[in-house]
Length: 308
Ligand SMILES: NC(=O)c1ccc[n+]([C@@H]2O[C@H](COP(=O)([O-])OP(=O)(O)OC[C@H]3O[C@@H](n4cnc5c(N)ncnc54)[C@H](O)[C@@H]3O)[C@@H](O)[C@H]2O)c1
Image (tube, rainbow, N blue to C red):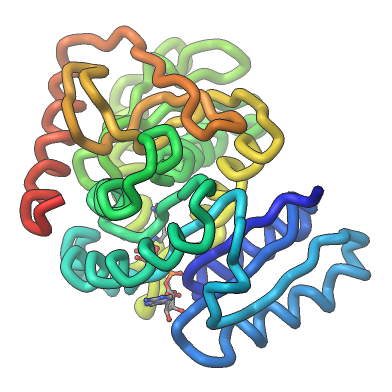
């Protein structure tokens, strides 16, 4: 049986994720949105690309949640993106209302699905989806760390003039200004970057990673990044659908790991057929642990505002 992936929100991130997923033949893709015609048009357009791509992914655009029934994975990108000068946190109340609208319908139609939340502010929206869905914690995952790590990896590769394939990196914590890039665990061909670059260079790349989303918003003016975010969510979906047991930084609901209780925070997770199959508790220095706690505290403030 082919896998079924629903993408809620057919805007920049949603439609581009559909593009990556269909062209990787991860399964059949259903695009849904509140704007009449947009998911239908984009879905049909993408479907018509499949003979050229030689991929048997069926793509359907719809406004009817019945068409999403029994999805294996549901990616939630519904919501407003940032404009220049806005922080992700400014989106909180609007996107929380959207989450309340969407998650109930998703759950009613795909009770056994795994949810991957993309809407911002990411950690708070993942927490909302978790609470509204009533799903077990392994089945609600937030996408941020894969994107933030990819940005860091791209900057490291550019700085050293090496292949991006050689670069691994870990960015933990919340998806915001308090994210925690971990240079000690970031490597080029297995060599930690702390052996390869001056401290000041690493700090510059870390800062660019923290500001990575804002850098794109500033250029685009009318929206936020979508190619890398949608590639990131595709990597997570692929790890789950192919049961790859891949270690990726994801926002997960912590129940004591890293000393954090009842909160979504970005940590290394093993993604496989059951969703989050394990949370890795890696050793952190006191400074790194303090940064993670600070990041968790800012997520805690946000979830308190919407009471989830
Ligand atoms: N987690 C991350 O790293 C990350 C990265 C990029 C974007 N984002 C977030 O993802 C979200 C989407 O970004 P985008 O660039 O695709 O925005 P976009 O405006 O291009 O698309 C959002 C879509 O959601 C739809 N929508 C709104 N309410 C809906 C509802 N109730 N049901 C179904 N669809 C609904 C809109 O009609 C729109 O088509 C934003 O909140 C953005 O901040 C997160």
